[in-house]
Image (cartoon, rainbow, N blue to C red; front, side, top):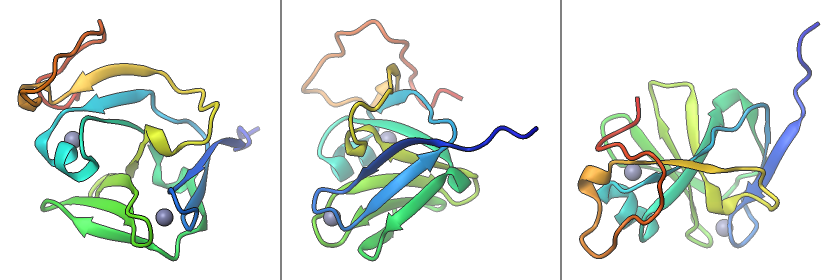
Length: 136
Ligand SMILES: [Zn+2]
Ligand SMILES: [Zn+2]
């Protein structure tokens, strides 16, 4: 019998125009230190994520995508400016900022990526694994 997909999380943007639910498995949270993320989000950002098919929008009229690299797209709300998603067009995975999930999120942060391009204004004080680039 196939495993029934149940809602595992929900979230949305600051103004509430974008609302979504996730059914299925969410990735643990990874902190990304890359320069693009730090500019886009304002600082280091925690990302969870899931298979694209597991992300269901309840409303997304104000969702727009910015092409930040050849295959990279960053999704944001045109009404409030919340930056919520990152996706590689060639992959069936979508990264979702950890901060936009309704709590309790059930998520746990497990690693840092792109610490090779971390900012010069902070130090990482936790003991989580660190990767100079992506973890894969
Ligand atoms: Zn919004
Ligand atoms: Zn990044």
